[in-house]
Length: 167
Image (cartoon, rainbow, N blue to C red; front, side, top):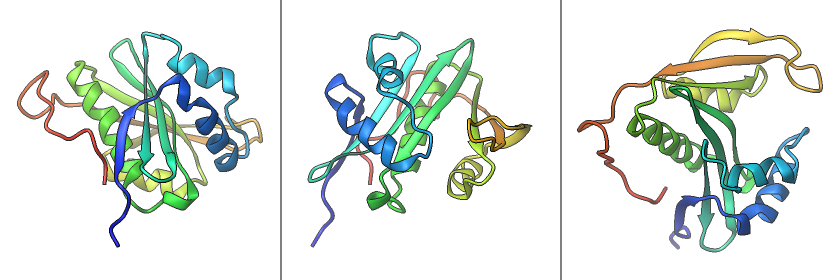
């Protein structure tokens, strides 16, 4: 039996109930609904995506901003039932490709020092630690600040070489 089809799409207001429920299931200190509403509420800086499984609906999402030449990755999550399938990688690649197309120079994010899967994903894509934020999270855990220098997309600006789907 083949896996269900998966599509990568811009986050819409209709996705918010599912995204908020996933956020609560995944994180000890989740974003609230209002935070996600700002991501899809016409905020011109925001670039937010979901991955939709044809059976389960939204199973992964990412929220990022394009600000002053930088891609700020604010949130990236995959449902526990859909991990280890490349969905986080697909979201990250989409964010990075969009940033390159927009001519952004650097991607930056914070990640919990104990979040080994996230740190491995970012390292695999070339992110490097540029600092540590002591007690960054509300529970007192530190965060690594990770950054990646972005190069122009293959083929030059405005040339995307990928599909709108993730596998």
